[in-house]
Structure formats: C-alpha cells, structure tokens
Length: 277
Image (cartoon, rainbow, N blue to C red; front, side):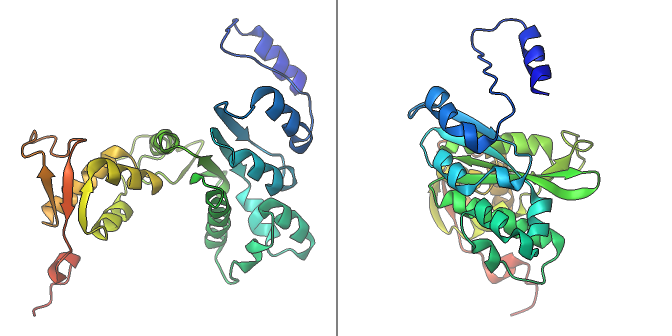
C-alpha cells in the first residue's frame, strides 16, 4: 500500500508547495519524534491528521505532546465502536488507559445506551484535549448503518481553526452539523439547521454583548456566524433581544459585525408558559 501511494504521488504534476516524504509502514509512535523534528519544529503551523489502525496506535502520551504545542492542530480518528466495546472488557483496561492516559474512562457510569456510551467517551477525550488549552469539536462518521462508527475529533489553539472546522461539518451535515455517512454527507436538506442549543445558550447570556463575542461563543459550541444571525432573529421575534448599535442597519441585514446587542431575561410567558397568572 505504501509503495502504491508513493507511485501515485510521483505520477502527480510537480508542485513546489507540496513535499511528499514517505516513511514506510511504521508505527506512529515510532516515527512521530523524527517527523516533529524534521517537519514540525516549534513555531511551524502544523495540521496533524492522525488516523490509526487501532486504539493502541494513538497513546495519549504522544497525542498530548503534539496538541499542546501552539500552532499544532490535529484531526484524530477516534474509533468509537472499539472504545465502547473495550470499556466493559476487563482484558482491554491497559488499552483504554493508554488511550486516555489514565483511568478516567472508568468513571463513565454503567447502564448507558450504546449511543450514550460513545458520546460520553468522545466527550471525555475532548475534555482531556481542552485541559491542554485546546478548543475541540467532533463529527460522527456512520458506516454501513453503524452509527458513530468513528468520531473525527478536532483540536485547535485558534478560534480561526474552529471557524474552518464548523463550516466544514455543517457543509457535510446541513441539518445538525453532528455526523454523516458516505451516502448522506454533503447532501442538501429540506430541514432548517438545528440551532436550538445555540438559541438556548444565548437566552442565558443576559446583558450586553458585542456581535463578535457571540460569534466566538457560537463557534466554541460548534456553530457558525450565519447561525448567530438566525438565533438573534428568533430571539428578536420573541422580544428578548435588541440591537443597541449601530442605530440603523439594512432591513435584510439587521446584525452587522459591529453590532452591540442586549439580551433581556425572558419573562414567564416567553418560555412557553401559557398558564394564567
């Protein structure tokens, strides 16, 4: 496979911006030190695409050393099916400890559904990446009706990284931005994007905010700038959001990037309570 890949790369038109350096069939943990030294020294903007054959091949000790370095971003294929099965298999304790770097995965409660177990395992991995100073996001990959067969986990130190990632995942899944299969990815949807979690988050942010501040928060939650405008539109219709400045704006673009916005606390009827006082 490595020889076939080298042959295909050599057949491509020459491009001075691309340097293909084959390293042969070797374990990630055996070559990562040399790769970092030669191609990703400190200060170099680097995107790691870590796609293991098995969970043993991405020990936390090495992943952590990579992602904690500024300007080092990573897309990690997290094998959710395997992690879910291994979580309750006593023979796989050492593998799971290596994956997470400790036994924190054992604190995930019993009695969860398969979907809940996979979600908890992915979230824990993201939490550990965030403890290193990263922003994180994930996107589930379904394979042959096996939901969340994998989860692509993105780690970045930069808000701009989240902006790129969120745009890509909502392009792949226009309805929820959460996951897709090879058959469903990038397919148009008749449904509006599900931004209810973002609307609910904004409801809790009572006070005055800059538009750019709300965009940053939305990106951390996995949403995009257009979603922010849609959420503000909805809250404006409910009467809990007003634009303080600028004083005027185009009717079709009421939330310019320079907007300053006030979010009011919802009254009892604003939460859908139709009972009489």
